[in-house]
Length: 79
Image (tube, rainbow, N blue to C red; front, top):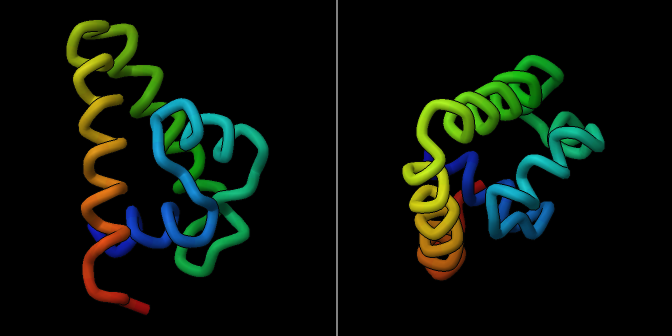
């Protein structure tokens, strides 16, 4: 949800699907409280699945991720 997206943005400065994928591949996401190996695997699976199933939708998702990160970053602080 939005709290997790905010944590990814705030703590790892993730602003794109590419950055999200790289962070999951590098094992950086599991270092955050509330995340773990399973979440990293689910993120990678979802990104790969989207890219294979619908490349056009994947491109649109990349733009939405960047927009969402910016919007969430400007929202109220949630711990």
